[in-house]
Image (cartoon, rainbow over the protein chains, first blue to last red):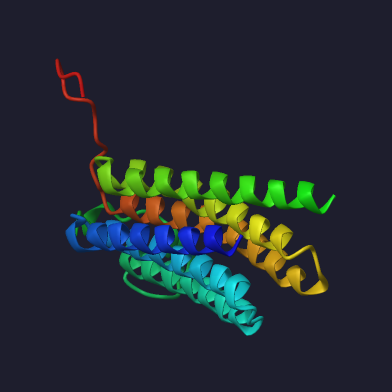
Length: 103
Length: 106
């Protein structure tokens, strides 16, 4: 049974490197953020698998922190590239601004 | 009963690996941001979610596996949220949507 867990973790690592290729090549900044987000999710799954293999329960806590950081980083980065700031000061800031163009 | 649980766990792990493989292939191969976000949404929610469920079943459903279920809930919420935020950011910054080329078979 441990063999299956090892195989799963190795496959996830290889696929995470494939995501890093997209993060290097992706034409837009959103592609890069998406690729890093998916790679982080895979790292979270690898941490859970390592916790099951080695029997270290604290690795699950590390995986939870990874998932939370992944979510917060992605939301903050998309918010920043979408509106140019991290917080909207008025509701009008949420309206689309076509003058910004494609960056 | 234990054998049944283990078989279910192995099946969930394999299904998760297949979905993660599909999502990563989509991320690498598909032509624009929106289709890539569409592909990795599956990879995030179904793939990693069933891997987490498989690991939780493999441990025999103890109390410590509640953390795995919490992580599953978190990834089920965060996957669609990040995909939506990325697609909205791409749409508002005016990314062109990929269309099938005329006359091509691709």
